[in-house]
Length: 420
Image 1: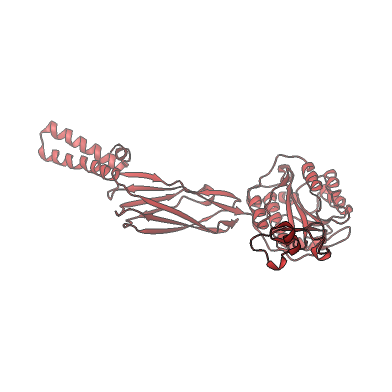
Image 2 (image 1 turned 180 degrees about the horizontal axis):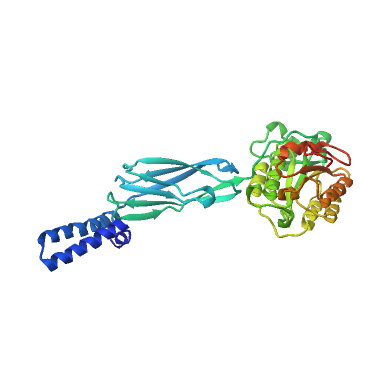
């Protein structure tokens, strides 16, 4: 009953106050009719509070996101599934889901009645122009009486996560040469090149082809042994993203930083789909990417990447050198000086293809492309170390200039105009 009284709405409190006032006036004036009216008006919210407080609705809730990952500017559908698990029908239900401000206003729905063992499904859409990982939920249910005098809130604990990834654009195929490194069961030699006596077997695993059983080792070890798979070859590469705050210009979704993140996502997904074993490096060091679903792991990481207060690329250069085995290094860079360009340029050596995507950050302030002398000097330094240069001024899609990554020689050219 106390919970019901605390749940009185403004209308319910007004009814109760009016009823008490009518009762007092009826006693003072000796008006029996006014007394009856006062009893009726005061009793109505009290009865509603008692009924709502004694309600024993049991509801189950499930939420489904379709898709669980959405690109910036894309939409996702949220489906709420409510089930009345009791044998009593519910009264009026007010449904409100908790949604972050970046995804829009909180959705609210009214369910007039859910029959016993009944199920209701509610759909609504969310959209975000900002990258990030957003928590949707928990769901709250307000139980109200038909007159709107009492509302009692109950909440579920379940919540789901929507990942808003950077925008990914399709890139044209560009031939990028690089080293090839081994992977698989045997990293030293192929079974095909080894004799029957030299083969290195391993224990049988569920699902192994029985044709790969190595009977001599099986007889010697007393357990089923199989030949290791032939060595698989996979190209490896590194993707560097410059997240330094002072290296970028602009604010919001159209800032040079957001363009750089989108470019890195597009390049990373493109290379992953071409079979490249990729690792992500920022100015704060190497980022962890899971081997399973590499492109999804990359997008999940880039969805939450933020600008850093770091002033130099020293940790990024160190991470690139420590990684080793990279046949391709793609660097998406903001503003940097010639000395930083020299440090980065030395990362590339014989057998490594280096591609530098240089954002002309001054164009975000309205300057002409390539007008900054430091920008031109950085191009010259990196080109001198054998890097391929892709210029990316404001208002230009990475897809329109990516062809420049395939140009060899000291200087590469891009459709944005002029020598890179």
